[in-house]
Image 1 (tube, rainbow, N blue to C red):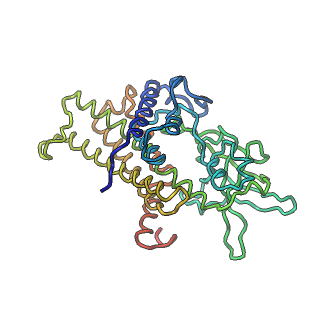
Image 2 (image 1 turned 90 degrees about the vertical axis):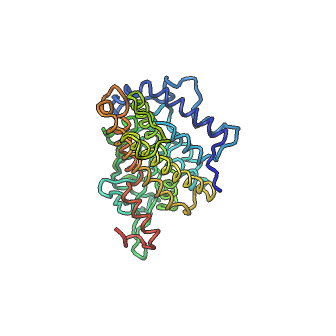
Image 3 (image 1 turned 180 degrees about the vertical axis):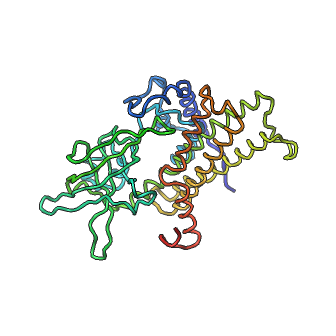
Length: 386
């Protein structure tokens, strides 16, 4: 039988994260009004000064936990990440260097804060459609990069980026993918202005261009496209859990407001005796729990098979698809029940609604993941089901 009970360590760490997010909630509206062009802080925000960072607590926890991957997602589901109260943990580009780079590359770049550049303005949701290029120059043992990337997280806050580009065609006409370490200050590497967004205004997104940018051949990492899938397999369930955290906050707020109005949910009632609001809330809670289960299965498989395994790619797509659906339907449904209070800036419900829209888009929208799931179940190859 599958055991869904949480360990003492799980519960303790979830409480650490919950306390952090409750502190952040006290100034979340103020932070929401700060333009994206103004980074919040280079270190811990004063609102959490003197407290242990949740990820530090996770690394130091002595009590038994369900595993680093599972417990991280459990921590993310406790409530909305109101804003970035701490410096971001090691970004995707740095992870790729340290997990998949050579020893020489790890020594040279593994300590740097490197983001990951994949998306392009005209490539949509298909990384294989990108047109950014890398051309080898044998005279200088350098690669010349040209292209443009967009929707890149924290591009202007770190040391550089691990950017994925296409190389020159091989003997079979296929163009290999290269992951290339590109540092700030390199001639031809230009970073654009941060994007102004509907929601998650605390999260920095930007773009950059490459015009005849020259980098040493040593900057090229192996397994280009494989690196993308590996990192996204790890990231997507965490993003999904973040979405459930947003839903948890707006669900709890809605429960409270309905209880104030005398319409508290009674789960023991039969369906015919429930109010419309009760029934709608119960259905949304059921969707939340179903999505939670898919995410937990995905992270459990990651722990069993290892982060570099391809054995749980379909479960990753399922988790991302379910969370996109849940965050949109739950935040929308809660606003409908809340009425005027749902759209008032006196409360944070409308902020959760805005912030949650991105969950279905981050790291591949739901439509693309549905195609991936269908191809796997039906035995289609890429390009046969579009």
